[in-house]
Image (cartoon, rainbow, N blue to C red; front, side, top):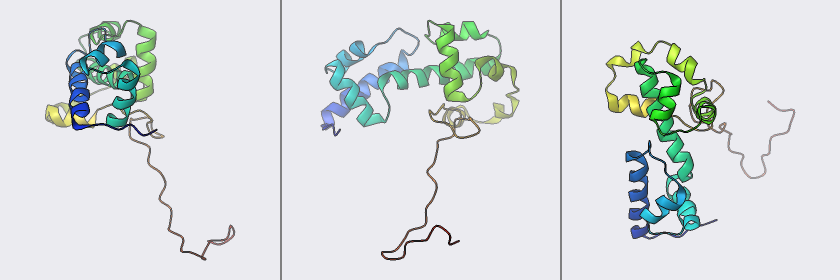
Length: 163
């Protein structure tokens, strides 16, 4: 489905995304974010996905998990405290989403050593540790990439037995 957007629509969507970035720990829902963007909830969801590649809820949860990773690396808060500090209201849902995006449970992530990243500037660490849906086989959050296929010229189809 193709969603047509004007520059003004993109500005309003960016405003809603900025609200998510700033208020990730607050209770946010699509209707409230749609009001910020001056759109209906359905149109907002479709437009947000078209503009940013993920749904508003997915973007919000990615922000929460990103912040949770930073709090868990510090090691001075329990997983439950981190869950509520980032705005999640259910420890089970938080743990499931964290595991889905990061590839390990919050407890395992917190228990593992993180000293190697201390010398990395915060802006680089934020980019490199951003949770990505659809992690690779190692579940480390790396994006899944399609295998590279050799181009086949017209009339030169490879046979199944050829190498």
